Image 1 (cartoon, helix red, strand yellow):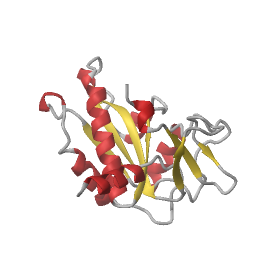
Image 2 (cartoon, rainbow, N blue to C red):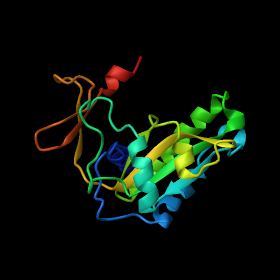
Image 3 (tube, rainbow, N blue to C red):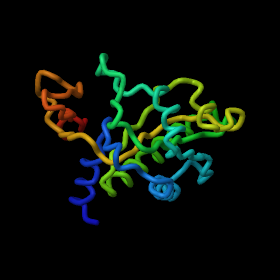
Image 4 (cartoon, rainbow, N blue to C red):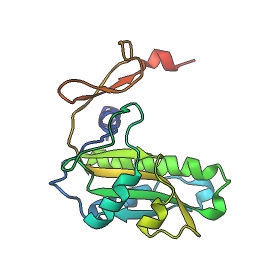
Length: 194
């Protein structure tokens, strides 16, 4: 892969919040994404993170209402029926690392790797840190041993997402237009370099 292809992959790895629910993913689809993450770097090569995959419709229906979808869309509770993700990957850290900042770094690295792997397959992904505290219980993840640090909603993309310059009336706030296109403002490279 050349640098242009990689940059195109990163650009396509956006936050998707609406999916083609009629095209469900299977366990193997999500396991392939986790498999990519297992090759990612981790602090001291401890490889402490564990992953819980949700694809069963009954389990998905219990996880979905416990997620918070978009802080800037105040009147939106998440995707409607028919637009919901068909899989979730919970990135879980051992309780023993609860005060270790490296778990957050490892979680970020793993999540970004999963999101890029999803984008490489034409899938959409939404990383969420805002969810109800009982999400471990409803997923059957032992809360004594692990805690969900991040949940990634995954599915076939069901919305159009475009990147745009941040010099608009919206500033850095993402927004949707009348046609439902999700706009994501990005700073210019020269604004990032100090």
